[in-house]
Image (cartoon, rainbow, N blue to C red; front, side, top):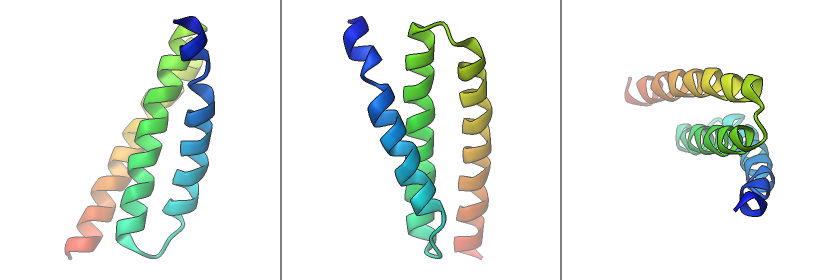
Length: 81
């Protein structure tokens, strides 16, 4: 099981890079995809961090996830109005 959790760092990294790319888009839909990717990567990084007992990393992911949810909300409001 540890082996599989250890591998999570690679899709987490890939999702983080993809998310950063999408967030820079002018299209609200693409930015929304970026926020989804960021939130998924936050979850993967937190799971990986739990296995290696990287408590600061987990706390960072919780904070970043909160900021991504805020960004999602602001992006959705811009789309509607």
